[in-house]
Image (cartoon, rainbow, N blue to C red; front, top):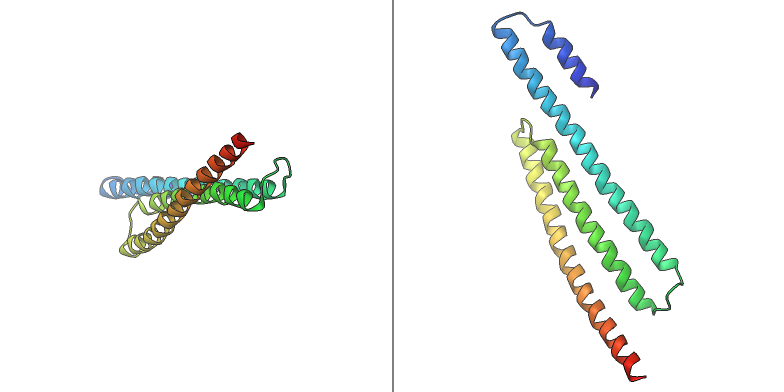
Length: 152
């Protein structure tokens, strides 16, 4: 937050009276803006961490030979886990965009946020729909496998 220190230094050199009130308002706005930017970076980092961990987990699951499951079942399980992580990551990225736009938004920033929100919500909707379908398919397959084992 190096900009915060510059804002404080500039504000303290303001003259007394009306200029100091205006300077204080600018300082408060600058502090909020820098906090929002910092928060955005933290939230985006969390989203990237979720993605990285999900990708590592997916690759490990695809390469592991611990459990003997057919390829289709393994792919379904990996897609389910990865899809869930992608949906969660999209939610975090949307929150980061909202945090960045929260302080003194311009119409341009609000328009960009609306477009990004619409795209991410659209992606998230269909991603969650696919995840639910995969989960149902996974449950059906596991119940069929259990029924087949009982017959033997």
